[in-house]
Image 1 (spheres, helix red, strand yellow):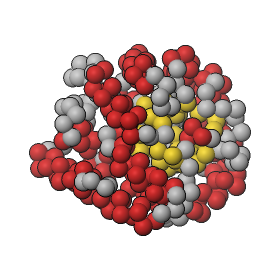
Image 2: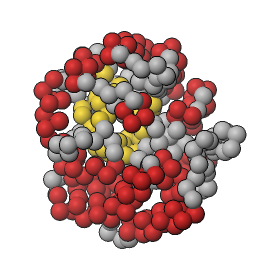
Image 3: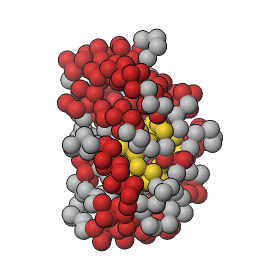
Length: 299
């Protein structure tokens, strides 16, 4: 369970217009995360653009990350793919390359049934032989995990955690109680959706799977630690500094915004994979304004 706790920072995957990895820039992103003290790195998640990369490109990204991080911070790598065979291949490769854990989303073109998803996870978890986190991301996959399916999956060897979307009714504590009541004691329930991280952590969610921590790990970690210790006032103070950025995430999608964040921070200029387009200049200015509170001392 400890792998899937605390702050998991999800960096962008910097590639050029031909899709080639910029290893130097990836190293820069990763070094910031390691130096800040994040609990894990979420490589090749949605923020890492895994769906836009070929399996071979993803393998290269993982090896570059493992070489850079060199065991200083655990790496959880996304292995979601349209077919079970490719997902199994990526899971095997992740283990051989030195990843510490897996993150699996049920990607699909045809709508999937619960039984199809169960067998998919069972196959990938078996060959991966690493702790695996269920990636429940209906916003991108269009598949929503029922409580019954999560309960079944949690009984599969190596399936150790779930990454949940924010509950529509905001009842984090209630959802956590329901999930904890149907899964093993050491099964970790964490959340994505950065603007709900404070509330999820204060409700004792195990992990914040964070988009923004991929480029702003220090204030993200400060928010995480405040919430983990139950310091609601400090967590609220830090979250207020994030609020302008959360608003932009909700308006444009965090993936698009993070490319502008990277440039605004002076880390490097990269563009999202087509057909995703960069933000327009007026919106980019709004990102720069939203970053200012987060760069102040004490945040």
